[in-house]
Length: 145
Image (cartoon, rainbow, N blue to C red):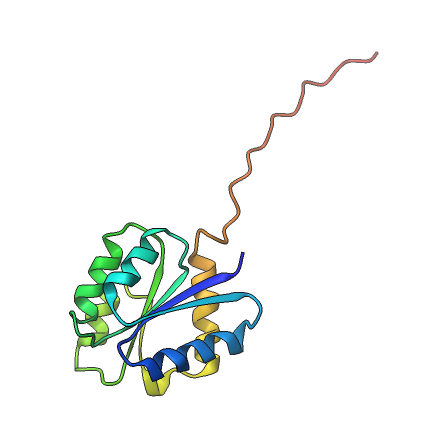
């Protein structure tokens, strides 16, 4: 199953850039969904198969603080990274405290950092975790003597 990444950003050029970054890291093992509005994003995230969500801080309908809460209310284990053009003072700390995996300026998001985000999302995603195995008890020894 490929890693499923979604991004919500009202700038189509930013969505294209995020998609390029994703495919540079894992060209054959990634699916990417880009959305301009949080409503459509929430529908996909609710299904539980998104491992990593890239969330723009400034959307037409709410900011990352509001939208992060909406994602968390869905009860999935989707990891959220907030990506923003400008970061007001104190915003990063508030978003991390509320459960964002990371908060980055778009200028700071490089291919190497994106690779690290993918690795962190994979490690935390139940989509890629193995189901716990149960050990069967050993049969009692048979006395052959």
